[in-house]
Every structure is written in structure tokens, then in C-alpha cells.
Length: 357
Length: 235
Ligand SMILES: Nc1ncnc2c1ncn2[C@@H]1O[C@H](COP(=O)(O)OP(=O)(O)OP(=O)(O)O)[C@@H](O)[C@H]1O
Ligand SMILES: [Mg+2]
Image (cartoon, rainbow over all chains, first blue to last red; front, side, top):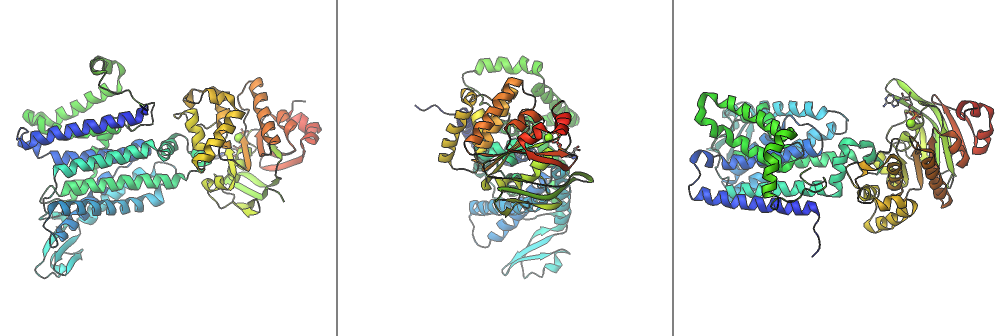
């Protein structure tokens, strides 16, 4: 048998692990074993895992900082909601609405990514952080002033109030600061799972290709990259737009899991939360980021028991995780014995260059 | 007609004027060297020719075509390659992956042939093909940087201080390889601190001093000139 490359091996392992986790979670959830609180979090977890993958593409692989990733999520969420609501007049099939919403969300977020990326990614330096920070705020404030409705003659838009939509017995979809209302709740766990797989596969594909190796090299050796004939600006833009598109898909999935959603949901705090997933999971470590996203979304729910001390505990857990992932000695105490125990199960890491970084 | 023709270019870093109007030519099949003290503007010149920097004035022509408006990555397909100062290898990649990056704009088949050629020039690299480039010795990294540049099958290869920081025996090796490349028909623009070695192998040479070309001639002429001996050859 042909020997598999270590990166391929480790990817196959990840897909296998993901499929097993999905199946188990799905069965447990359908069997009613998972508590209502946690069950309600499953789709948001899927969305945040995708956000973590998306931001890792920008931060970990491209080496650029994005402080407004929730902005792309927001663009995806609202454009997705509008698409799904508009489609309600055409089809009753929820899954179809969801898929269309995710696709539209991806397209609009990608366009936003291109608008931000084209001027900024030509420059050397940390300009992307500043511009994305502003972008997140701008999107939030812009959406606070959007009024969108749909009736038989199509979509209506205003920046004043719902009355000026001039609709004929239509329904309001986006109502300014109140956000999107009457959203079709069509998100499903299965589509969430598939979205994670798509995001992971796309990222693994990018990181393991020759292009991906070039992208990673941009960070520490831009001159060498340029001198072998690679357009740095082009590949940076391509990666960033892909990252934004993923965020848009995650946003659509997230929004269509609720009946209403406000622009404020996707503020600076959310952007930072997503960044925390990435940092905690290990910058550039896609799988670590996915785990961190899951843990940090579930954690506040689990800590509900300690009521008043909830946020305090949350902080303590964050600090502990940091210590354990960054301190060799502390790691040796827990992780190494665990590795020995499961040594045969865990595939050896590739020599860098895999999605594991 | 000259393969590379640089006419009166000026290059600045913000308000710092690094190159103040220099002109030179490289003909097909020649080794031309630019020598000069630290900070004279040698690297700046090569980086400008390779599109990493833009001249504020003047033109650069390659094969009769003006290229000073093209971005760096468009020059590789034309046949200009820069082997940058300080052995900028991709340290997280293996030797072979580095070489593969060098052939980024070429087809798989072409790269297979180029790889053979590079390994012929640098047998050492073949031995270490799956070693991570960051763990190579300085000399090996220089070989790798040159090998990577060769992978693009350049018509003009620009080398920025290939002997920097190498032991004398390795310097000789690198210069031998440059001579072999030359014999096999490559055109080379060489920047060196090691003026004596560079003048020995060069067909023609230019002396750069704080952004101006102050002298030019054949390698031999300059090697024998008194001023040059005093300033660059140690007596
Ligand atoms: N990025 C930069 N920003 C500002 N000034 C620069 C920059 N790079 C080079 N310079 C200045 O331009 C001048 C020429 O530099 P250059 O690197 O071309 O010299 P060099 O001849 O290659 O020297 P060396 O032999 O030491 O490599 C120097 O005065 C240097 O300080
Ligand atoms: Mg220099």
C-alpha cells in the first residue's frame, strides 16, 4: 500500500473524529439525552466553530489580525435572513431556504471582505486590524438604520423607518435597531455539521497546497515569496475573502436559528470572543481553535450552577487553559501521560505544513 | 542589444535618496558585478531591477521591454530572478519544497527537469532534500537560495552577496558554481562585498559609491586600478 503523507493521515483522522462526534451528538440529541440548554447551543456551536476556522485562516495562516470578524458574520447573517425571508414566498422547503441563505451570506460577506481587503492587503503592516475594527463598527451602525421588507412586488428598502417602505401588505424583515424579525427558524444541526466539514476541508486544502505553503511563508519571508514569482497581494486577498465568506456562512446559519436577531449581537465583543477561540486553541492550530470554540460556548452554560461567580470562573478557566497550553511543565503533567495512554490512537503530527500548523 | 539596460534610475526610501541616477548594462552571457562599500546602494539597485522597489525616475529595460512598472512576481515569467541578500530560504519547508517553490510559475514536468539540473550543481542539496531548510548550515542555505533561483530557469540571475558570512573554502565553492553557470550560458548580475573574488570572475564591473557609479570597466581593469585596490581590495 502506498504510504500516506503525514498531513493526509492527520486530516483523515480529523474527518473521522468529526464524523464520530457528529453522529454521537446527533443521536444523543435526538434521544433527548442532552439537556435543553445545551441542545439549544448546538447550532450556535457549529456557527462559532466555523467562525474559529475562518478567523484562523486570517490570523493563523495569513498572519494578519482581524478585529472585526463579527462584522463579516453580521453581513452573512442579515443578507442570509433577507434571502431566506424573501424565499418564503417561493418555497416552503426550509432546507432550501437555509442553503440559499448560506450561499447568499457567503457571497455578501466575500464582497465585504474584498472591499476591506483590496486596499488594505497591499500594504505591509498591521493595517488590517485597524480597518476591520472600524468595519465591524460601521456594519453594526449601518444595520441599525436599515429597514427592509418584502411583499408581492419584491424587496423594499429604506433608511428612515418601516412606514417609508411603502409596502402593500408586506412583512418587515429588518427593523432598524430591533434587527431582523420574524426570521424563518430553518437552521438544522446537519447543515451545521456539513458547514463545519466544508470550512475545515477548505482550510486544510489551502494550507496543504503549494499555494498554502506560499501563504504561510508570506508571514516570515515576504521577499522570498515575491522573488519566486508569487503575487503576495493576490494570495493574501484570496485567503482573506475565503475567510470572510466562511464567516458569512456561519452568520447565516447562526441567524436562522433564532426568530429575531439584532445588529448589536455582532459587536466588538463577539469579534474578540472569536479571537479568543483562535488564541486559546493555538494560533494557526485549526483543530485547537475548533475545540476552544466549542468549550467556550458551552462553558457559560455549565457554569450557570455557580451563578454569581460565573464570569469569574469563566476567566479562571481561560487563564488555566492558557497556562496549560503554553507551559511545557504544566502540559507535561496532564497531556504527556494522556498521550502515552492514547499514543496508538493519536496520529503523529506532520512536519508542520498541515492544518495543525 | 543589452539584455538588461538600466538608464539613470533614482530610488528613494521616503526622504532618503539611496540611488541617485545610475546607468548600467548587462549583455547576454556576461557576468557583471556591482561592487561598493556597505550602504552604497547595491541591494537597493538589485531590488529595484527585480521590482521589489520602484525607481522615482529613469527606466529599466529587459530584452527591449520597459519593466520598471511591473510588480516583482511578473518578472519571474520574463526570466529575471533575484537571489536576495541574507539567504531568504523558507525555513519551515524542506529543501525540496523550497526548490519546488522556486519553480512556482513552471509546469510539473519542467520542474522535474530543473530539479535534476539543480541537484547536479549542488549535490549537497540532493543529500539533504528532505531536511528542513532552517536547519541547513549557512553555506547550504546559500546553495539552496541559488538553487531555488535556478528553478525558474532565469535568463538573468541576480545574486546579492552570495558569499556573505561564508568560510573561505565555501566562498570558493560558490564562486566556482557561478563560473560554471556562466560557462553554461547564464547571464549573471552579481553584487559582492568580496570585491577581489567578484572582479576575478566578472566580465565587466561597476563601482557604486553612495548612490552613484564612480567607475566601470572590465573585471581585470578594475582589479588593477590603484583606487580600487586601495578602497576595496585592501592595498
Ligand atoms: N528599507 C529601508 N529604509 C530606509 N533606508 C534604507 C532601506 N534600505 C536601505 N536603506 C538605505 O539605503 C542605502 C543603501 O542601502 P543598500 O541596502 O542598498 O546598501 P548595500 O550597498 O546593499 O549595502 P550592504 O553591502 O551593506 O548590503 C543605505 O544608506 C541604507 O541605509
Ligand atoms: Mg546589500
